[in-house]
Length: 234
Image (cartoon, rainbow, N blue to C red; front, side, top):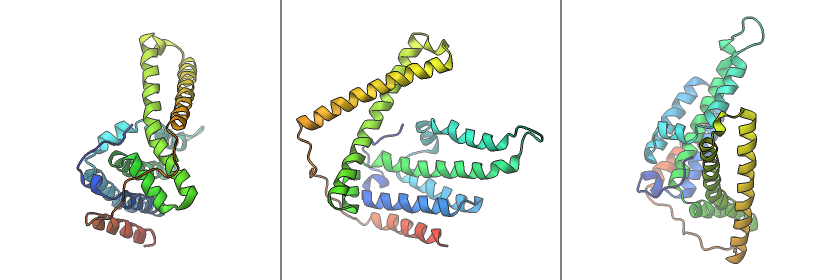
């Protein structure tokens, strides 16, 4: 799974509020234009977003490869019927477009995740939502960005341990039960340690966050966000 990495790409230099605006506008445009022509335009925008974050489509697909079987299953579910003619290509068009739209949204989100530190995301959320709700949501966003990579690493370690013990030769249901139970145990253990660490460090609702500033480099990105909003109603 992709995660934040320091760098000097164009997306790294953007204000996190600008990147959030582009993401929200892109998602709205993706749901407003579901036809092939609209998705073709959004594909170009996605390519620009990935290039600005120094990401490639292959790296994004590999980082979120667990989504691909789910998206493919949605298409196959509509493509295959239980009776003649058994396969209906026309019925799979809408699910295929929906799956592709999901991939585009995930790709743009991957650029945000790769180029935005958790503290910057928290600062942007608390700027957008003032008061205690914003602080609560901002703290939650920061914890999620830090917690998910650890859980992913734990599951990968469990799977490696299973393969070392020839667990890959067991029935699929037994493997899922073993990995799932071990993964939940690791998650609860990490949650307990996290709670203890937050208590020991006197977790504050008013943490000192980085100062956010719009720069000249944000102007083109904000223009893209405005164009996407206009595209929603176009």
